[in-house]
Amino acid sequence: MKLDGEWIVVEAHLSGDLLPEEITSSFRLSVAADTYTVLTGSEIDKGKIKYFQFTVPMGIDIIGEDGPNKGRTIKAIYKHTGGFLFICYNLYGDDRPKVFTSTPEHKFYLVRYIRAEQ
Image (cartoon, rainbow, N blue to C red):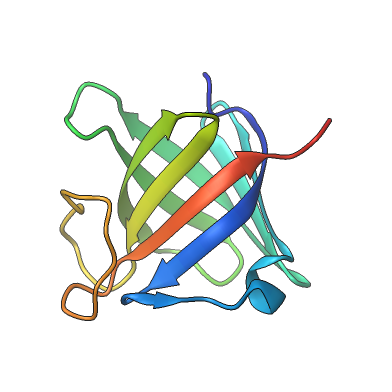
């Protein structure tokens, strides 16, 4: 799976607002097949990923098993292009986003990641 590996946040938008780098610089995403781990400062979120690679845009379900998202399923879309991984999460609803954007109206969490240096 081409998403496997360690990813760091380049920029993140929540409900249309750019999150400060002081906050996002400690965020790290690790993907291994159908599992994920997110480190946000000292907090760890772990769980499963269910891929929907044949949808347009490609979708994923983030299924929290340990940490702040335990018991939640977060619908998201993703694309891997130009060396970046873009994920647009719907943190507040059951519908999967259809576009890679974050505005106050739909409250999506849009993150642009880059692979961590190995």
